Image (cartoon, rainbow, N blue to C red; front, side):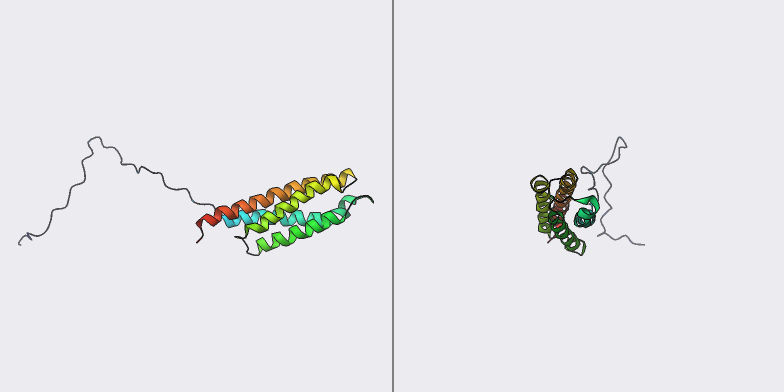
Length: 149
């Protein structure tokens, strides 16, 4: 057998005199959360809150001085917006911002329009919930939008 003179010798790995393991200077990136799942979760809860709002004048028992149209209209708007998000409008964060505005209206109307404590508490608590869920879904859409083209 003849030796091929053009063949280069295999380079030797650098010596590691202490036997230490080489470490990558940057840790691996953690897996990214699915932002669509966050939008779906917040929207599903918003949908439930909207259904409760629409039915609450019948369930809570609003009194004659209470404005029962406010939670019914707000609930219908929240249901439609949440359904749009659940149907696939995950990137449309403006829908969730509108839902958060409806939550703000519910908080304000609880003190301006309602006479009974039950109606006021119902609208104020649901207003806070709708507001928070709207901002949560919008934030998830906005965070997910950073990776979109």
